[in-house]
Image (cartoon, rainbow, N blue to C red; front, top):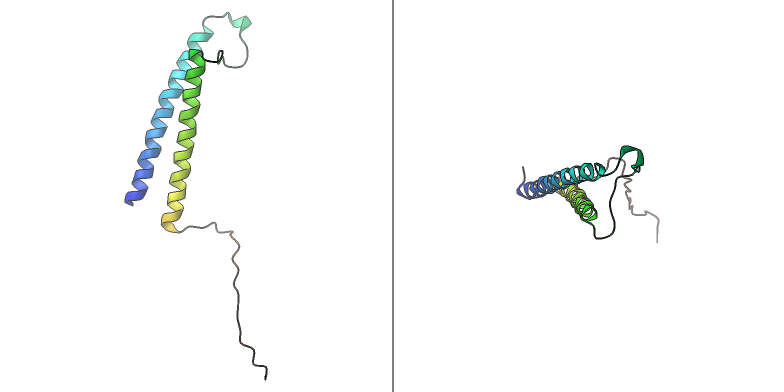
Length: 105
């Protein structure tokens, strides 16, 4: 593997692990919060709390981790395309053919 690609891959793996950690914490916290209310009174949406609440901060950390992982994935894909000079196969290509006219002056 090309050294530059390895760096992007390591960054993607690192951000993926951070996302998994943040997601695990989010799932655990939502389960804990849902235990506070009876099943009949629970909203269908996941609880994210009021601004500044602990659950909202955990949700925001998870969202940031997800965005960073997506950005790292896009960076890796861009690096792959730069390394192999790959272009989409359906890209239109134009050829300009220049000819010399043989008409008399």
